[in-house]
Length: 499
Image (cartoon, rainbow, N blue to C red):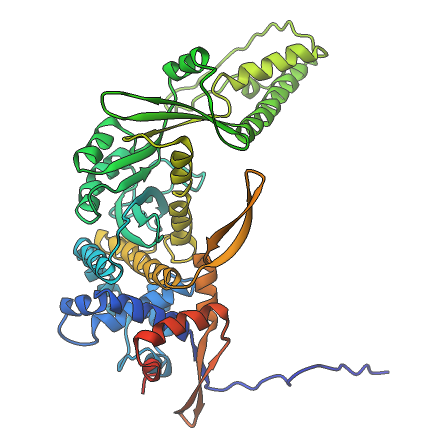
């Protein structure tokens, strides 16, 4: 007996020549990079052939679709109907696209200045407080000019070459405006010393520079103050901080629920340090110490039971030029059932700094102001995450220095276009619990949400006998509707579709 299978909806489709292009991404890149003068500027880089601005829009659009392969970009643009929707009158070979990336990379510094000038002209920023942070990304290819073995940022294999980069965004608007690539073994302080003077030249004097402890070297912080700006950074604790906690235990200030602060201002300069104690941080540290002590106890039990592993007690550094032999002997006097003794060992592992972290500012802030301003730098970490996952910096697929810098800049420009469209959206109100009270905060979508929503908005062309017919816009959603409403307010919507 044959079963009859029923299907719902339409029948299986037959292959056709119809095409869909992510017009949401195309127009956001085109409109916002055009509005800050980047597209006109890159057209000055070459006089013949396809305008550089059209190539730039195509590359950024392809990157925002989740692929940083220039070979894949060339393959995507090999379809004449796709090129028509992108405003390209002729095909682009992979060689042409690679050359464009090289050209953009060789002009990366002046393009960043041009980007800043365009952003400042468009938005007239009053607040130019800046979040700065750095990271690294794996580079494919052993011959990459900036590739080097350095401290692995986001992978465990320390034998893979990487490229370092430093990036900056405006804290209030969350619009990124700076990125610079460095050799994979370049230290954080070296990067900050190189990049900060250029950032100073762009932002308003008197701005706050918020950095992590990678930028906390004394000379770097001094340079920020000498430039007429202010800094807030996380710094390492020292013995004097432990002494201050012992001697001034009655001076802790309440900051918010489960957080208190011991503040110290240096009278001569106004420089202020903040020791924050967080109950939540202490709990996490305590649980980690518990697990560490439990592993130690298990190792001792195994030793006493005749099951011994050197790695439980000694770490041997590998030296390919020598055979190293280590003999371990041990004597233990410990009552495994004494809970007070175990608790004492846990506290010893914790140390006096458990649950405490230290911030430093060039000028005095209230503890709450310092904490909230430093917390706000988390968005630059989100930017780095997005640069790697959304706009294709992980892994890098180019080798020479100009191409590496070009790829970095393409990722930044893609992020900037999306960030501008997000900044111009009306924030929605969201209720959150702070200090046991309900408060309303302004919320806008994340970069990933923006890219996904805009990528869903497509223009579909029905191709009949090789000829393009009427365009159909599909998959509108709340984000793309608002973004295109803002674009429509500045431009003629009828120009959204190329003739």
